[in-house]
Length: 117
Image (cartoon, rainbow, N blue to C red; front, side, top):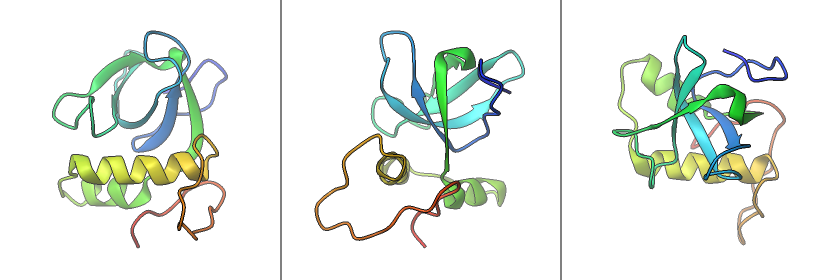
């Protein structure tokens, strides 16, 4: 699955909406579909139980991936909405989409960012 600029989108990657009522919102990709759509979650309004379905062409893909969540799902585990919210906030800060929270001394590594290790 790729966005309009040819960049691949993969599960648990950080994306932001470029079009629609939710333009500017950040999400994590829950899964990709073969029809050009992805399912997005943010742990709040778009929960793991009811993801948002969106055309991948309307997304901006960022390099950051919630590696720990991806590994847990790959190993058959369950991801909670609170974990999605936490990972999303940390990845958005690392990508420069949100301001760093006070007291957060973590440095962001380029590419894949590990959450909660």
